[in-house]
Amino acid sequence: MKGFLTKCLALLLAAAACVYLLGMAYRGTNAYRNGRLADETERFTHLPERADIAVVGSSHGMLAFLYPPEDAVLLNLCMSAQIPQYDLRMLREHGDRLAPGAVVIVTVSYITPFWTEPEANFLWKQGRYYDALSAPNIIDVDWTDWALRRFSPVLTTDIHTVLGAFLKDVPLSPTQNEASGHRTFDPASIPEDQARVRNDHIDALIAPTFPECSSEAMEALEGALDLCRERGWQAVLVTPPYLEAYNDVFSQWSGDLYPRFYHYVGELTEKYGVPYLDYSHDPDFAQRYDLYKDIDHLNLDGARILDQRLWSDLKDLLGEGFPFSEELSDVPFDAN
Image (cartoon, rainbow, N blue to C red; front, side, top):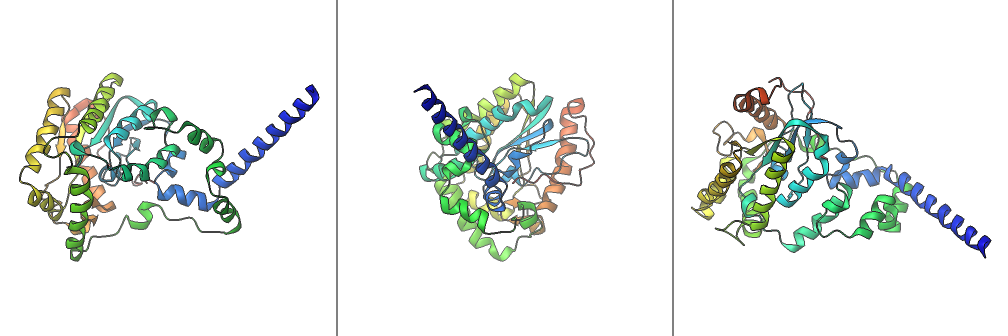
């Protein structure tokens, strides 16, 4: 009996080793990597061990804060449509990478204080965090699914997809910077983009609670600022620049939107004593279509100009707390 059990155990271990090795091989295929590029998790395989500046937020921060000072290391933890609750979890997960006194940029868009996530949106985005965070930092985590993915992704992937990854040689997709970093916005697209903003930003995310804030979003923002205080990081709230055509959508929807937004941001700055830098209506960006890839996201040229301004402003604000050069790195962070 003992010999039989030993053989069974040996077979199980051999099978587990085969599944693990198959998963390792699958992770190395372009098909698998393309999936990670698409859901913005490929970067989590090669994050810097130590960083001087971290950024959290949604795509507005992901595409705006890319060029660190040449003598600093940037860690951009933003993701498309990332809710504030995951900003907090990103900082918890990767905080050990931040140097003492590190600067943490908390991106606040007009959506942030009111952010109410529809269930379908939440579920659609949830899977990507299984590749970016440990299980305790995932909301409503499925521990079994997380463990299987980490052990071997073939255990949670359709067999046809796995076989196709090995049998069909596909090219590696371009990164976000490579694919659209130099795209410039065509003002002929303004009506279409404004309709997208009304539907995806206002109707879906802001309107359900407005004019009140989302208690979950504000609690997460406060949690992030509390964590910065506990860890000795220098938190800064920043709203990136937007085209005038983007800003108009919000003012036309409600004359109370901007007063309410600034009220809630003001509550945070007053409670935590953190600075707030607001570039949202900056005239240097408001009608510069050449600096945007769409109505509310900067392209690489726009990010470079903004980041040059931002680091200079932070040096003025923080003094010795921001001991970095005002010269920018030539290589932008690629948030894929």
